Length: 165
Image (cartoon, rainbow, N blue to C red; front, side, top):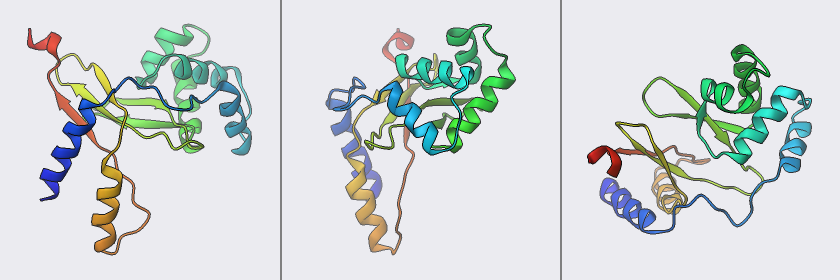
């Protein structure tokens, strides 16, 4: 029953515009405020990583972030430490796609932006599903069973049109 409901909601979400635009786009200044609230100093690696994630929607692996965006500015160990501190402060989130590679993207905790991903099993291309119609249904389902403070992570996997060719 819940499985059919999830599939129905999924196909409704895919029909909508999934171009990762929100009513409010978080700014670099808002990210710096979030860092300050979490007692994080604005170090050069943190600034570079936040700017890269803000300009280039991920999710990206630590290796991708270092090689594509910050080049030789800092080493990979610094990138990992920086990502860990930003994740602990709920400024970025870790995405796991079942391939053993952690990927990271910005969170917008102030404005509640929430989305899911559709990942190609072949080339690993990631499409954003920028709507979460599941929230009400999941909360209702969980509430009936006595659960509170519900969250979820939901990713979809398939073969993209390019890989099908």
